[in-house]
Length: 241
Image (tube, rainbow, N blue to C red; front, side, top):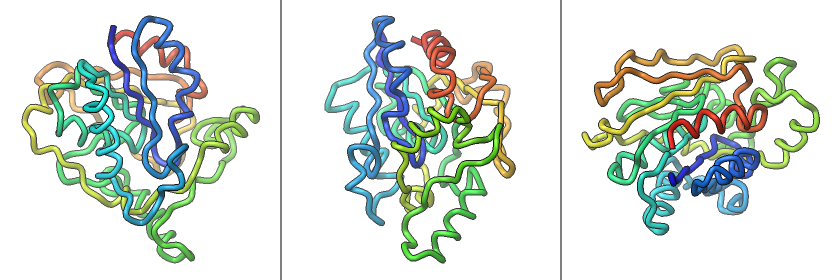
């Protein structure tokens, strides 16, 4: 039995994994899909002080309090930063890092560094009435849709779980100063359909930090693959358990 810890991206909540969790659990694995501070059942805790460090603490605290080990730590989008810093703190508890259409940072980088379009959102927030929070991205025409979701019923469901993201979470730097984090195997899953203009994905080096060949898989769907292709995503994740 493996433990899958699924970490949602910016603006989302743990509810976005609702279609994936039972697929992993029915295969006999332990699964957790928490909402980060300021989102989902913790939306009321959103403040200008909530940052990347807050979200990293959410994940590290959960792993330690639940005494989780051999964790397959999955980070979607912005959560690539969260899982990186979390693994930096407790590398001995992490069996695998999965970057799910995610930001893949270097030490000292913020979300705005990894994905420059993020800075545009931060600048836009600075001119609004509440400069410390960034509203969710708007829905775009297909195939981009709302975070890659185009089915009207799914779009309506997704809207129920979206909330503002704190600017601080997009500006705080990742900490990757523990050499042990480089020994953890990585897998990258890219969603290759309906990629919006302005989104730039960094090339994945052919060799992982641990010296093994890079593992990169693709899903022919939009960004929120846990909503649009839950079965296919679960099948890929189960290969790692």
